Length: 110
Image 1 (cartoon, rainbow, N blue to C red):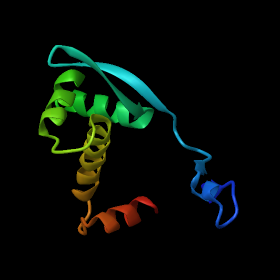
Image 2: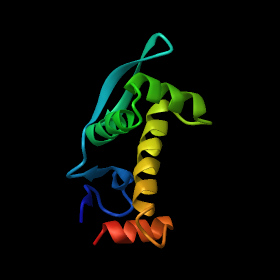
Image 3: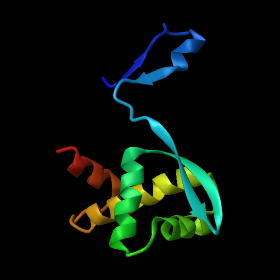
């Protein structure tokens, strides 16, 4: 099991889960609307954003600016993760007859 707890049941520390294979979150700088800002993302999401920007023939800053403008709530880092996840889920769904999220996850696990 990838998750483990370092405490016994009932101990407050039981909520301190440690993911053995968790990817480190890295703070990255990007320019949005002429201002430098930072986002904290794992490498996989950062690489996903760069790949999507390349596919859409946009700069990374332009792609992230659009995501920033369109988000309704939450922080920018979360919005970027959701954007990447939704992008790749939509691509996976286009290849399946059953495009419910549960079916996509079940297909990906095989």
